[in-house]
Length: 411
Image 1: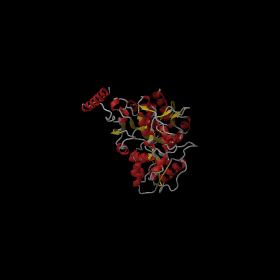
Image 2: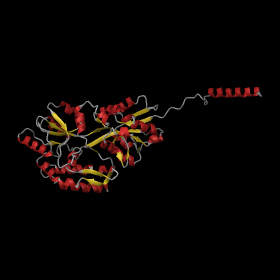
Image 3: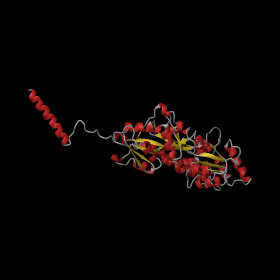
Image 4: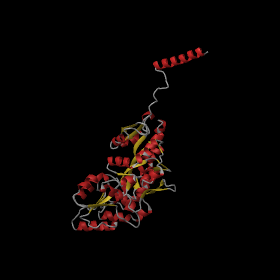
């Protein structure tokens, strides 16, 4: 029996050796390589992401694919699962569209990290009752004042208007408040004045979600103060012929004392030869705060992450790794914007950038619901029509018509 046993053992060993020689399975074969996390990002941020994750994340390799922002948005839902990304660099205005299409999944920051982000910036990725992204950077417009022409900063918009009128009469400036509206009817910069008069895009419901049925292009407050817009038009304080280039040139040459600009204008700000201030727009009426629009960008986790078996790791990558101070500084710095993380923001060395961010304390993220696309044209058109100089449409009529068009389009 013992001899028989030895024969069986020898046979078993021989079989194992034979299997090894033939390439069969063995107990010492290498474990399968983990599937990579695939990230789609734009050209500005892809190199930074690649550098941050050159060794992968928690043992999982990371592949970064460079794509234009428009392509990320348009092709995410139609890309074959095998080629689709697990994480995307995104704009918060896409949130409602992608969430409704089932292309992205909710993410959750822990309590400690959540406190490091201003509520209005976090709100840019909120859709319904969930958050669908982690913000990394934001941009907004602030008011730039020529401190040589305006030694004392105006405390109200009435004071600002009076200063412009006085400077014009003295021949020191030729233009009014340089708020770009075009070309066309791009009303992004005008929102600060719009909100300061009581206008809004959408109100929120009791749960804090944007309510697409509550549109405020012709809110009672806005209509009540519409004569102020008519006054701006009559005095040419605000004029719809002002494009971004016209506004920039007028301020640089000293032909205007006030200008609305943002981080994208940093090169111009650095080149100015005169002293200037960067502040929020002063109060226009009552206690209404002139709040600028915010453009927020950051990371989203796609539904494909679960199909690829990397959803847990992708969630941690976005909500933990990318939410930290150093990574936020690196990524926001790649585009010259302020980091969303408030702790990181305190470490930004460029004072002009931090001053612009200070004007966004009450900022409103661009609405991220699909219905917003129906508001841009009538809203911008109302500003163009009511500030077109002689023959302009009274603001009350222009914004009432805009409200009707928006409501009809939203349905």
